[in-house]
Amino acid sequence: MKEALTTYLLGQSALTDLVGTRVHWTRLPEGETARPFVLLREVVATEPYHLEGPTGLTRARLQVDVYADLVLGATEVARIIDGLLGGYVGTVGGVAFDHIMKISMRDGAAEEMDGAGILSRVIVEFYCVWKET
Image (cartoon, rainbow, N blue to C red):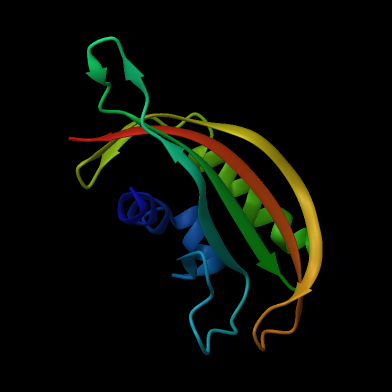
């Protein structure tokens, strides 16, 4: 799912026009200081069952952290991501996204990022249901 979601996001010029290829999972790669950038995290994932066994679906809570020099820059990127992921249904790279729904969007505390300086952050959380095809 992570590779498919990354592929989907990096295929959207509305996002890449602002962040280039700076969409990463969990950590900022060493030496990366350009901004804005996006960090994705799979906060929790479960595989639901019914009376006949596994459903084949995975339910995940995704956290998207957008970092930029200014909160307005982070907010702009976060709104684009919300537009791309909120309500998304489709198949990418062998992963069928049943649906992705926004849970929340909020400002995060500014923080120091591994030599990138003090950055503003906007956090967007999504509920995602998917399965491998």
